Image (cartoon, rainbow, N blue to C red; front, side, top):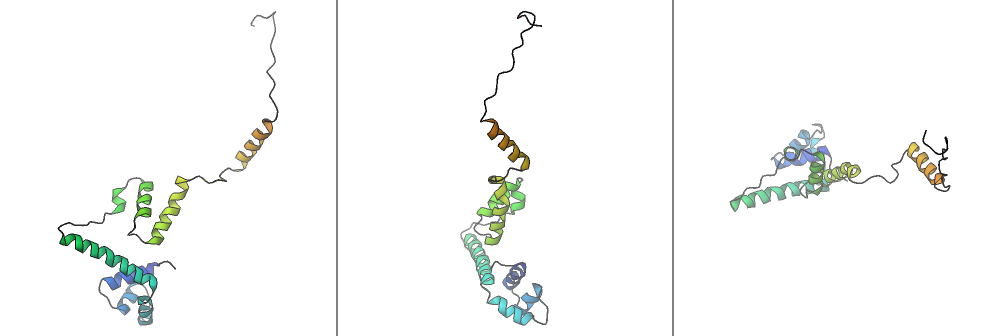
Length: 152
């Protein structure tokens, strides 16, 4: 199952240093069941994967900083003026959540590949008429002979 917004907020709250109960409350669970929800979410595979991904990005930043380089993850919305380029970048970004990459690919699909059955009723009728018309040869237009062959 994909990670939901509540799970993502829970992982972010845990990453910021909150306890499981506090993180559950911050992510939108009620105070009455926050302790149980926090315990359950801490064991959830999606939350664990999200925390590992965030830890991986933080570790890469830290290693680069030690080497004297700095990794700045760009704000993609400011980098691209063309929406198709933005969606392509999100789709190909390995650090992004798989669900978000999947949604970007689905959004981009109609702009890259035409549907095979894209023709409507009118186009179907025109194609059928062309198919029938191609069976018969068209006759030459009538010759106008008036005034003994001279143009009128």
